[in-house]
Length: 317
Image (tube, rainbow, N blue to C red; front, side):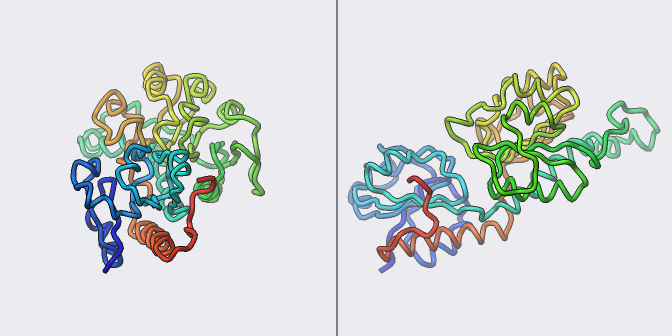
């Protein structure tokens, strides 16, 4: 008989197929477990799978009295109340670095798309304005990459991969993070200093109280009218109202965003700017990344049910 695992967040069924071959999955479709399953059904659940950004507090944990493991599908775990889990002696695991390459690729894609104005260029061709030789101020030459200063906020696995990729474009790379790392890139002592120095600010930090709205009106002002911001981490790191104001006032030159304060992201002020490139949180959405994340989920679950420590446990959880 397969061990029961509750699927807490809403996932496409295709993402759970491999996991479902090894465990008996109880899919709540993103609803609170008690609304979908009876108390008797939840009584035997010992492990659950969640998306890292989905809020998961102690009240939900208490609906499963035998719960011993929370396994996050993906790198993030910011939605999980780690203190509540620790208090209940529930192990928390994730998929560290499983999607780092894909996320870094998208970060560079967003940088190139917004700095080279690919969306206005695409529209220029599709609208017929190019063939009609109609002038467009958005088609004016823009600075290229050689010599461009790229600042990376966060130097974890994703930050390192972003740095390696943008360095290949002959850019100058610097970073700021909570601690210095053994990397060849220049370290700056604060986010303010990084924003003042760079022309493109790449956000690659984890969500948390210390990074909430870290990129605010002050940081955007320091980035300046020729500066761009790219966010592939979590939407909470940018003060979205301040970002809209900075774009409206032309305090900054543009933005590339894969994440938002509220997801899924509905059309709003951000979607009206031609100098903003938006993607629907697809940074880690590649076949290879999903295979790697599923491998981590399966390894964590198998270790838990075997009575062993999670191989990909969240540090400090």
